[in-house]
Length: 434
Image: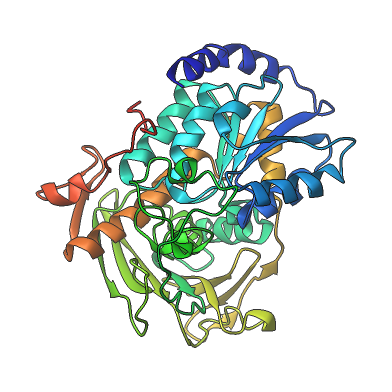
């Protein structure tokens, strides 16, 4: 594996030179890894964009892979190439870009592999499983000079871009606080016994960097989100979108102080991560403090600031953001809509509802070779992801963290800083690049 990755990495410079010559009419050849859940959105996107060809698919579950090959093949002249091991797919030098929609614990290592192979990468959120990986994924993008986008679709939304711009221009005055809301109806996952690995599943590849554990259905498709070995709870599942929007709207980078409390309420089941958590962040912007709060709830809830009220199909969910300023407040509903209220009388201000195409933004940047054309370039994604990890560490330790950006550590808290990384299961070790 190491020799193969080395050889692919040595070809990265040549791949960059070839990609830089692509014209808007040249076909961008894409391979997708992880074809269930969010992966279905990737398949739809890359089979819908002009001058993009989805040439290769990869999944460790043969039944999922077979169905995707059939569905994508119906839209092409011939079926795409099929792989179980992503490393084999990366040997195809004709592939320009890789999209990754695997579980969280695979994101960073798979992105690094792709960068070493000279591929550009669209990686689902959160881009890392821990703090250490958040640094390494950015380092890989820089070292191998790749275009890398985190799947934070909100950043490409026309309405949300306008909302952030208007806040920058002073629409609601001095913006001092942001709130993220992640209230989704999540029922119990129950308990699932250990059982043999299903036929057609390469469970060793699925585990990747995670420690060996007997197979259970609760630790596999989708419910892996609720286990620390693979996921980051709903804070790192749905919540990372709203965490990113809150940080974007506030115009801040890393927090100086983080505190989180919560728990696993109501249900007696296999879930390890909290289903309810409240997080608070403090930022120092040139000596001026700003604040952000974030809340995950898993059951019945009220709506806030009109969020979700326009979409009756999700009446049980409230997912969005609220920003508070010295002259009003502004609410963002999901990924496509914002409203504002100005002055003490809360008079209705500007509003808009319009989404965008995050996948198209990625392909445009692949063609231009301009990192700045990405709306969610990997460094932005990685910083937002660290807010998720710091809150989860605060929850686990039961105390407030004092984070120092310069040393990338929790001041005076060696235990919390040790939780920035994990012990990797060989040979699936995330390399230290920074």
